[in-house]
Structures are given as C-alpha cells and as structure tokens.
Amino acid sequence: MRILIAEDEAVTRRLLEANLAAWGHATVTVDNGDDAWAAITHERHDIGVAILDLIMPGLSGLDICRRLRSADTRDYLYTILLTARSAKQDIVEGLEAGADDYIVKPFDPAELRLRINAGVRIVNLERALRKANLDLSVQATTDALTATLNRMALLQRLDECLARARRERSSLAVLMIDIDHFKTINDTHGHAVGDHVLIELARRLRQSCRSYDVLGRYGGEEFVVVLPNCAAAEGRIVAEHMRKAIADVPFVTPEGELNVAISIGVASSSAHPEMTPLLKAADDALYIAKRNGRNRTAVDGMCPTVVAEYPLPPVVTVPD
Image 1 (cartoon, rainbow, N blue to C red):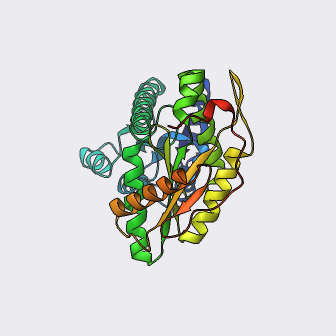
Image 2: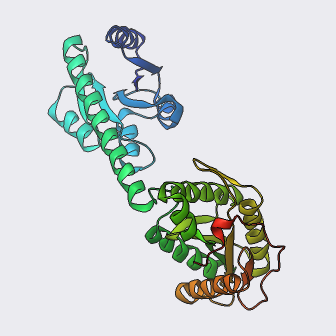
C-alpha cells in the first residue's frame, strides 16, 4: 500500500516525504490536485491513504474528497486533509466533503504518524473484509469440486442471458452434457477417480468455451453450457467439438488412463425462449443421444449426430 502526498508547498512536501520514508511507507508525490486525482485513479499505484492539501492548484483537497465519495470505482481510500486553517467551520467543511481526518500545518510529526497509522489500519481492515466477502460470494456460486458455476448460479446466469437475448433479439444455445456410464467408473475405480474425471471434464469443457460462454455443473455428472449469440446449428458444432475433446484423448487418473465419453443435447432459445422449456428441450435431446448409442450429440428437433463408435473400455459397457 502506498501513501499519496498532494502538496504544492515544496518544503512541506519534502518534510512529509522524509517522515513517511523514515516510517517505512512508500509514497506517490504530486504538487497539484489534477495529478493527485490521476494518481488515485491509476490502479497500479495501490494508494490506500491520501494526504491532500486543502488548497492547491487544480482540484482542491475538498474536490477530490467529494469525487471519491460519489464514486464506487476503487477500494476505500482514507483521506487526510492538510490545512493551514484551524477554524472549526473549515474542519467541518472538510469532513462533510468526505475527508476521514485532518491535520493542521505546520504539522507535528508524532501526531501525523498516529493519524496515518489509524488510516492504514482502517484500510487494511476494509480490504480484508472485502476479500472475505468476495471469497464468500465465490463459495456461494461455485461448485467446490469442479470450480464451475453451481446449479443456482448457473440458472441465474442462464436467466440473465435469456433476458439479454430477448432485448437484443438474438438467440442462444444450451448444451446439456452427461458423462456416459459414469456410475460404472465410480463403482469400478472408486469415487476418488470419479471426482478426478469430473475435474478433468470441467477443465476440457472450459477450454472449449469462449470467454463469455457460461459453464456450470447442473448436478452429479451433468453439466450445462450456455452459448450466447449462437443458433442451434452453431451449438451443434460447438457440442461436437466438446465431445471430441473428451473422447479423443484418454483421461489420466490415479488408476491409469480411462476412455471417457459424453452425450450432449442441444436446444435453442429461438424455439424455447423461456428457461424451463429450454432446459427440458436440451434434456430431451440428451436422452435421444443416450438412446441412440451415447457418445454423440442430438439437437432438439433434429436427428442425432451420427458418430463412429468410440472404443470404450470394458468398465463402461454396463448401462447407467
């Protein structure tokens, strides 16, 4: 964390720099308000505390405080106004503008150090709280095993994508993906190997997705991929690419290599604009792919994609 010094008086500025350096703080120093605002909004500076001269060229310390408190674009910045004015009205004006603290020039180094330490402590607590909230948010929306979206978050994202598609009058495709004979993998090799297969499957699916596609674990060995701006025919192409990414390269597990295959059902919002019918259509297409031999793609309203049978090992020849 760095401390910003915004002070137009050269002597005061140098005294602040010398004291802060002696106390072990890294600083960013400017002599006007415009450069101070530029430094604050430059994320690489990682400024946590700002010492702002009340009156300086460009933006004043009050202007910067007001801008900071009206914006929600960065982590909390603790602001200390530096002023030669000691009248209560001036101090109240600074605090009303959003300043956290103030110090009167010429400043006492011991007092300044105490006020800066208080600011650093508050900023560190705020950052720790924000990180904890972010971690909780990730835990609430992420499947713990595969690091994909969990079912609740997946459905929420699908609902958002459908709303966007309606606004933009575009379509999206949904892929319902299921691992063929997954129960047999678990029964034969154990759930640890089954978990390994799920993790690797999610990794390969993620690699096949665009940055704005949505991937989530729908439940058990089922995954859903949402493809915005994608018609059914295009969804079929993506599904086949994913199917081959799984089937063409054996999975390396603690029990050795396993040949894994998936079946995929594809449905489009053009035919099913609401979420529940859309998911049902994709699930029905998945059932058709399963019924027609597995390791293939079926599209809602179309014939299933015919593929050469993938040579599955004996452990995956028992029906689910």
